[in-house]
Image 1 (cartoon, each protein chain N blue to C red):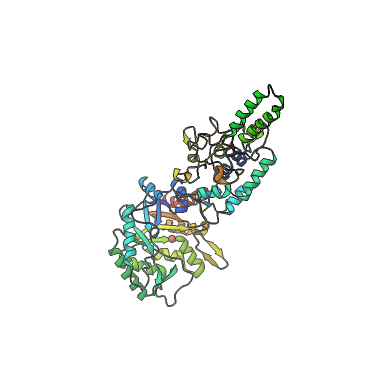
Image 2: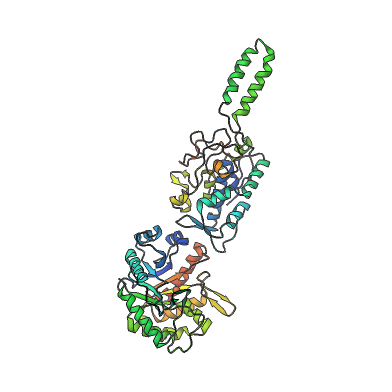
Length: 272
Length: 251
Ligand SMILES: [Fe+2]
């Protein structure tokens, strides 16, 4: 995909830390939550970053492409409009559903890994792609439970999705770690099974262990174990970009800078 | 940051320097500046102040209270205003009063000079009729009383002598976020957008009869004798035009 070969290391832009993002060294690109942006009224900080030539990638959370409900084309159009407003080379959302029967779940719900569910997902992704001005990347989610009667592993499911839709993959290594901890999936097998040549970029995030459950909170420090999954990924492919997601309990600028540096160190280690 | 000691060996905290310089609003700005300087809070471009996660607490009761209010992001100017009106700020004020660095100010009466003029005539008349001296003294006394009193005492002004903006927190104490020092906006020292700095209310130049504890009485602006040639270079007119004359505006 032209234009995103080398995004570098980035961070999720959030209004609460906009000045931090602007002044932090080592922010090569940012991601914005598309639903929070209004066309024609970009936040001053985002406009400033664009002026500086920092790529801004819209990330959506509400397309619900894994759901049985009809795709809401207004949401797709908004995502496309945001992409055009910020001159993004691509957009992304998740392999999940957030609505069913008109009700909003409030969470990114995992899709049953059945062939029927894959057919629905593929149809929805194709419809979205047809209405988007730029390529679409899809992200693996963290799941606290697995739907019964799964026919495919998560890696196989995504590989087939890519094959049938030509979409890109946004691999969240924190979600891989969460799934390994909570439902026993194998991150290495996942990485073996997905088409890494279709990797758009990578998410890294922090979380917290609560009893037996690991919560992908985006409000805590990135665990070394999550960086180990990133390390494993980087041993197989040089990711076009790696982005730190932090959504709450924002730490000091120095701590955020240190997390970005730790991510960069892992990436650079494999680049030689 | 070292607690500054003034030339008269009166130890003042930055908040106290802010208070003596320009009242409770300035003291509140100083507390916020200290929290920003220490990385305990951060400001967003839209002006909302939020606590930095696990970055420690406040050093003073004013700071601690300020932080306690930030359970959700609050606008920069509102943080200052709420702190200026807080009970903790009253405690700070009371401490300064007990150290005789401030006093209850008396507002200057508009016709204070009338007593002086009549007293002077009466004084001349007393040259021939000495019993009028009593009335003369009374009128001079009334003139002195109605002239008003600055909130910062001589001791308070002396304590401020020699205090310089050695660091950016003290610079806020002396000049306010809206101030300018050396051709530079004080807010720039904290990398604050001017739109954020502008949310700090300007001083209300209308004099009031209270003792200046409320923010509105003399917000971040006017105050004491420091409003001289260099004391308030804010460009916000906070010390211009007689706004902090001898009356009761500044405490
Ligand atoms: Fe993610």
